[in-house]
Length: 156
Image (tube, rainbow, N blue to C red; front, top):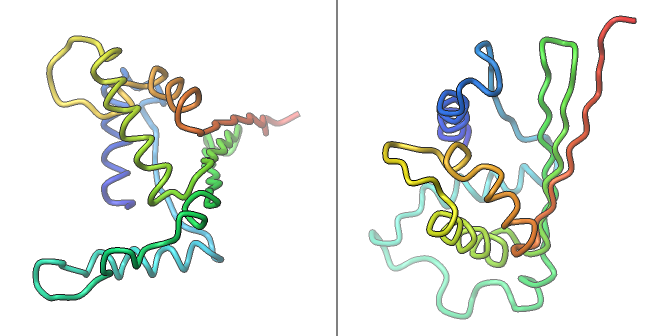
């Protein structure tokens, strides 16, 4: 998702008045391990066109209820500021990201948009328009946690 996420993050920074700085750079990568399996699955799904053939899972062939309810995720975002400071944000979800958590995130984003978004027009990113209000809703109602850690690497 890097090509899309990169544009979204930079647009959010712009819309928030360069809250991340004017020399802000953003990149993302997936580390080796289970992420490789997810990457391979995502690439396979991206190539799949359900309208072109009679392929794909049939009703009932997806994960079981137990598999969906026992699923979870733990994502670590790392930000570095010109070799001086480092921010780490751990985002954890209490359900399978494909079935349980995504639907809760979408629902909370819709409620946040309807109830808490500023009444402004234009082309907004979710981070710029909903920001902290959405984080609060996701924490309170969707089973997500956000933990931030700051490390200063300034010369002593």
